Length: 224
Image (tube, rainbow, N blue to C red; front, side):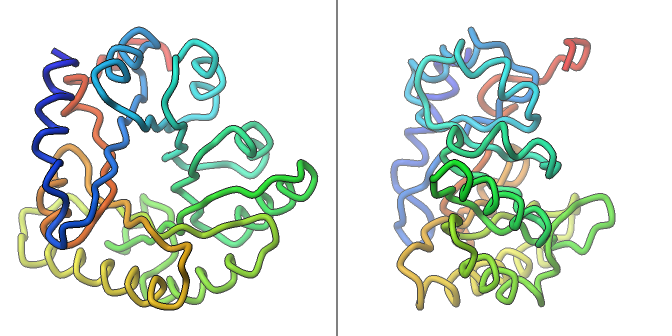
């Protein structure tokens, strides 16, 4: 099933997003076994994303290939486990976290690629900078030595209001383009999960994070 799902998705994504931009598919691997992840990689997945640092560390050596992303909420005291091992940290949602990543980069002599997380739906249950503060947050992070801002990440709220969701996507794309126009490092608008990725691509996302669409429904009885 995993192999078939990956091949179907990659075929659909080959045309790119609504602007014809290449779409990066990140496999969201929370609770998935190394065996499942390795099957997805063999089928063509090039990017994998973990939500928890513990899982990232436990699976790191058992997963064969793939660029490693971190896509979950990140505590400052766990940054040390990711810097230098992570292709892209999607969830830089506060200044304190950005500063800690920069500090660890300085100690390790590395540069860490990051995305600025925007709380596009103004949801109390989610982290991220408010949309109106997104560009200023990007500008601050861009000045931190050791950080390379590559774009923005957002999660759409659960809603059946297609007009609202479309509007939120458009606002994220506008923020992305504003930063990209003056910064050649800006390349990714990470927005879209298994329930809404087609909408996000139709409004300009160029990176999506899919778990269920690749691996099937999660088994939450597995230990995290």
